[in-house]
Length: 274
Length: 270
Image 1: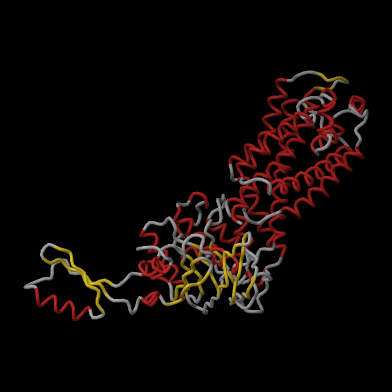
Image 2: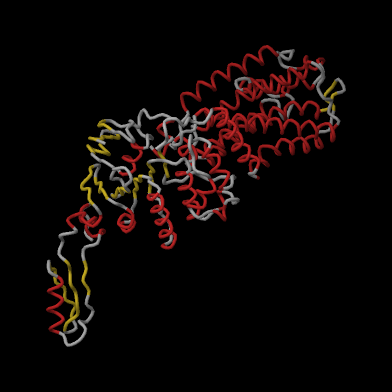
């Protein structure tokens, strides 16, 4: 994708965005609401037209991608697929019928952990189950590329962990994934690389551990001394802690060593105080 | 990656799958079955019991009402059903989801048509059985069945297309229902469904004549009433030629509106 531009009413929602996603990787797109994440993804999905730039998804321009192209991508929308009177298995079987080389619906149910819900109607599922059904519908066509738009919004922590292991098993099956998310820990947990969008521009692309110079950022050592909380930013935390250990007879009270979290560098990048 | 040799599924197969989906979605939903399918039946039972009088030529009001209630049943199965159903599917993301799959777009409409046909046939069948069993309705005979068939097919086609077009105006299913349901009810009152059309004020007749329901009811009266009663129609005859013409015109208008206005995404979604 080169120089993508999309404007609404004279304002560029996406303003000259370049992005390459490699086969087989999980790429997470981060950014505040209104930064142009969803617009960018919807251009890639072929839902929106663009006003400038060149885009190729699996070698095809999404604006002209036909059924053959659609058969190779899977989309899990933010809104989900809506209420249904059909059972999970019926929904997956119908969806599979649109694709040339689908997965077995039973296997997909197994993969997303909904085997027990095969005969339950779509509308009777809980929020988390429904999201897993959305993913099942997204992957039943055996896509080479899967779009996941904020897949775990509204999940409880346990459901999110289960979901993450589902995404990892999909990667093992060779699926390339483009994920947008609000959760920094999710991006860190899943993504091979993350890109940060603000105001329609891609500010940085890096592996999660390196984003925003995080790899080189000083560590912050904190401890309690004479009843006061003390902190020290240092490039040599090991030596500093050894020094501390020598000053105290036993344990250093309340000792902690922290690197900036992905959230810290992210908030800094989008211009918000952490 | 899909191997280049694998073919996209055949259209006929996808059409059958969509038809199956639409039938299950309709017949498993209690609200749609009660409101669309049973409502005309309830009307028939209640009106048939309450308005038990002769309208002349030895014909009961129920015999007259049969034509109107079938026309109203077709309206419900097509216009109301499509407008509300599609507006709901547009606002809850079902349409956007489908547009993101390799499903041929035509398959969606084929599924909807299958749903309308099934609901219409079932509604008419129940109305006829209830009419005959409870109220001794005289069934059509001979060529009247043919008229019955073309009026039902043309009326249903026109109202289905209009319903699909109207769905694009609504914000969501609930707002579609809030607009279309009262509109349909008023249309039923002024189109000669509940009352004899020749007893409705002339200006209302004129308004009703713009819309398909009046012509469907009129065509169906020619099916259920003796020809002697054609004289009490405002035009003095069943005007079957004009019925066909007006309904065909609405098919064309509805088709144009659909092509111009149909959206796979919610308006709020940009």
